[in-house]
Image (cartoon, rainbow, N blue to C red; front, side, top):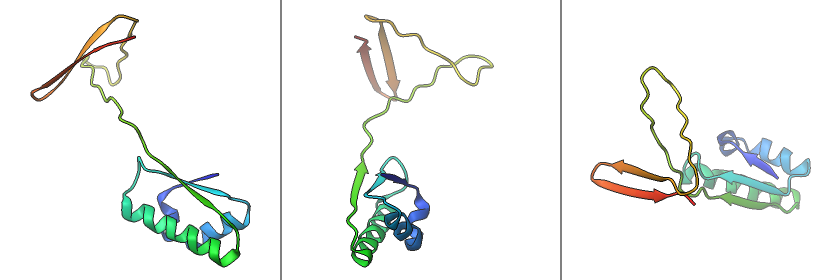
Length: 103
């Protein structure tokens, strides 16, 4: 399995070389780039597969939701939050408020 970066959208030769070197799964990380870039990558895999007669699967890695937080601390670029079982945290975004109990 080879994880593609966006350079493979514009480099058919590199994709073909990977296939001929043993790649059997092309992984596309959908947390990056966009649908048009992913389509170009897939088209290169399909063309290389037809051209070489070698099979290759395409694995689309769909990212799940990620919680992004900001912990204001004077003078600190990074902050840590200790979470213990049973703790409650409140998350705010504009008018939306969510309360999470950690289990």
